[in-house]
Image 1 (cartoon, rainbow, N blue to C red):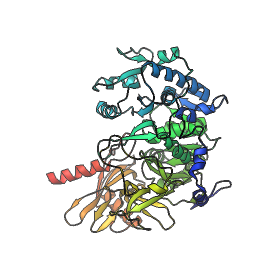
Image 2: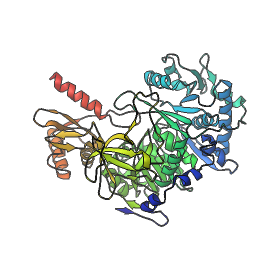
Image 3: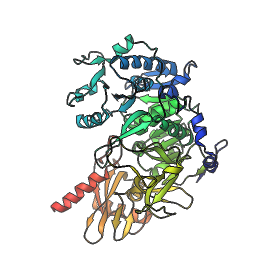
Length: 553
């Protein structure tokens, strides 16, 4: 289908008009002589009584904070950081739920010219220890619910703790709220250069130990462009990115991106569930929502009746983290009257390939979309040659022709992440004749069966079109005749039970939707799928377990 509306620029025109100088001119500071992320995301918007944050507590209490409120809070954080010896270039880690103090901590860290490192609140001590180990953080700010984990982390830095009523302050800790109340809010921002860091991220660790991803201030150019062109964020939108800021999509695009454009963001402290999501969209009048396919599939699982009360409320929905199944797109259109678009990116680069809400172009269900203006994406074979349409290969960034690219290597990495003029994403895709990108899978997820290359995403998408299937993960498992066969792990809808008849029905359903060879020869019904804390399905764990099981047999 083609998406076009009055006032929405054409994608082709945006690509032709793109000039990095125009993006640089949108910044308040100067990447060469002085820039500060706090100023870009808060300070430049003070004095206007402009809303910056809608924060809902777990109990449903709503607080609305202006950019001036965040400026005051972040200035006090700045003073606290100076008092404990944090300076420009130092790392400050935050392990907090989605509360206003988290935004203040991030902005205050940036204000002093320091580097913010997110720690997801579901991390255990080993995951925390690994990340603090490579970052060398000088301070960790957390709350009482997560403080105990740090006792199991060797040589952890000093801790500032946010206490609730009745909590005792651990010995040696800073009482964060008391310290802020006593601190001065008057701290001038420390200016830095575009090549200086303002975040220290980590990869999700889906296939190994997470690696440190340094994020320089130059990345603000790409973050702003994504919010404008792909999210299509408007000044009158009520925007809610439900992703957790402990991960890249949440930190980049639930906090940094919207605030950089001077548009309020939304926080909900409580855990995700479908009912609360519907409640919040209805209560706050959310018009633009962003999240993961996992979250959207859970909304679908609640059924059409649950969705009916917000049908027509959402202007747009955006999806990232995993490929968006076509059935989700059709369901959103039918039951929410909202266009939901797939966006593709990585911690290392932010978003690079999108079905853009802010630009007009053809949108094909199942496609990741088109390269964001400012990036040239290519498909490479194993020898590093660029491939044409309908030839599967590795998605890569052409460094020389991608002025928005900011990643140039992992923290303390011994091997380069970029070679031959390309950054290789590790994801297998193919270009369509119209220039859009079709996702096949991670390079190690692609299944080779009887000479055919089968992408797990296509099989999973076909499976969840069946009413019995809520979620599915597909892997290749060893087979002496076919090299590999397709095996599906299926989470059923509540009213269905696994059986041999349903297994055959699902196989025939996929055959009919895809082809005679790309169907699951084995189906295992499970209650849940292994996922990273950010919601990505860990197919490699399923594949590894199957390989070991077959060896044991």
